[in-house]
Amino acid sequence: MGRKRKPNGLMDAVAVMPWQGGVALAVIGFLFIRYGLAGWLLNTGGMLAPAFSPMLKLLAWFWLVACLLGALASFFNARKRRRLLDTRTNLESLSTGWRNFEQLVGEAFRRQGYSVDENHRPGPDGGIDLVLHKGGHRTLVQCKQWRRQQVGVAVVREMYGLLVHYNADAVKIVSTGTYTHAAEVFADGKPIELVTGEELLRMIRTAQAPPQADAKTPSAGRVETVGNRPADGVFPCPRCGAGMVERRNRRTGDVFKGCSRFPACRGTG
Image 1: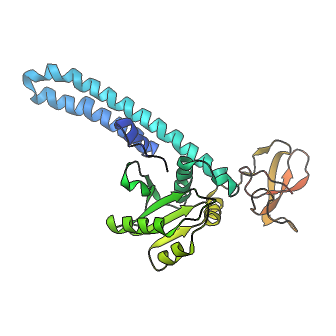
Image 2 (image 1 turned 90 degrees about the vertical axis):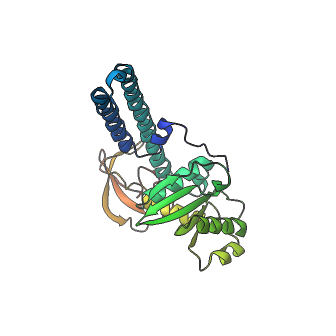
Image 3 (image 1 turned 30 degrees about the vertical axis):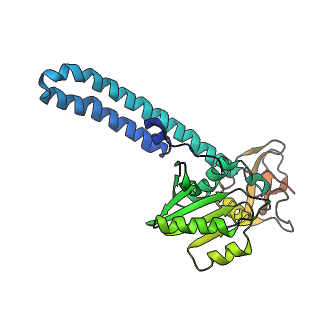
């Protein structure tokens, strides 16, 4: 796993927040520094007020710009994570690079209602990639993009040690592959969940955005779903394995069988 970059400065700190929070922080901080502190200084600062007032004005503008840039970065990062999840179709598509894989897993948990913190601390705590918060519980997550190698018991033991050290409620280890028998035995009876690649893919498919009836396909024009039931006699989508449904081409009126995850998947049968 690559070395994580520690947040450096105000803009980086805001970039890991929800972008709406960054915008609110920018406005509130600007008003407080520009008018609250400046007004207090004028009333109580005496002879020092003329010297410090311009500095406070400059600081207020710096705060505003840094927070807004951080909020903009947060907005684009959130859009990237949504697109990353919505375009996964099979196990091979989960191999996206370690950083993208962590973002993919984090987005899948966000859509389950978790609040997700990404670990930016380098060093021995690098085993914790994500921290999940939900219902007052804190869960530590490690992401392993291992397809050709099973996750062994040493990794599970390490995460159990971190769970005890940080007094967390549970641990999840998420892999694109599987786990050794020894790892499964060690995790049994402990607050440790071993998520395989197949289980992760099912979680992603559940979390993916629902089909949009008015979207366009490159070859079929405008289409609409004909009911929510799977198309009669049709097996799962040949591209991603999701259920097939009947759709209608709005231009020609023809009915065809398409993937229920359209437009994320455009499989037809």
